[in-house]
Length: 186
Image 1 (cartoon, rainbow, N blue to C red):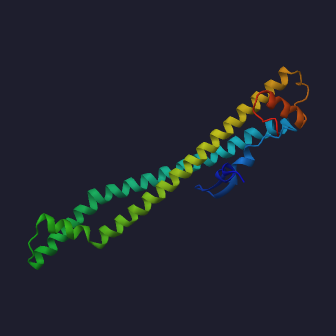
Image 2 (image 1 turned 30 degrees about the vertical axis):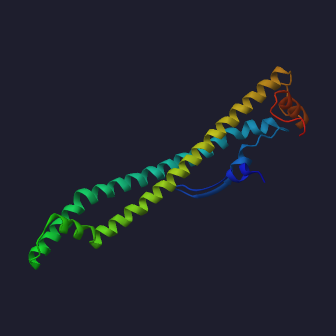
Image 3 (image 1 turned 90 degrees about the horizontal axis):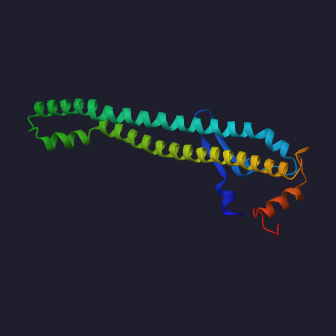
């Protein structure tokens, strides 16, 4: 198995589903029947474009949730905890220096709980962003497949084979050898 074969195995979670697929298989062109490849290209592209869009949407939602939580911690929670800590220190007769108040805030259970949630969201966002990048690359690969189909069709038409784009495998291999896409040993 080539290393590229393992790289093309895609496993992602979008908003609507968990998906596991083989991009290498999806990108293959049926050289024995180009009509089939022409007909399935729009559907394949749409599938990968939708997966990509869903992954981007998921990453954006997590990012938004993360930013909202960060803003809540900085603007609301910190103020509430500052007030609680100062009131507690005042009741107990403890001197409320800035350093003591700050330490008490950072060790408060509510602060720790929200910071742990923020940490989890950061990890989720990094994963979702990575999945979105993978699916964007898959969508781009489908675009390249389209370009290859166009190129193959143009080549066949220029060779006078436009009556039927269903060609024999050996004809396409020979054409690709001439263009130096395939090695002579294959």
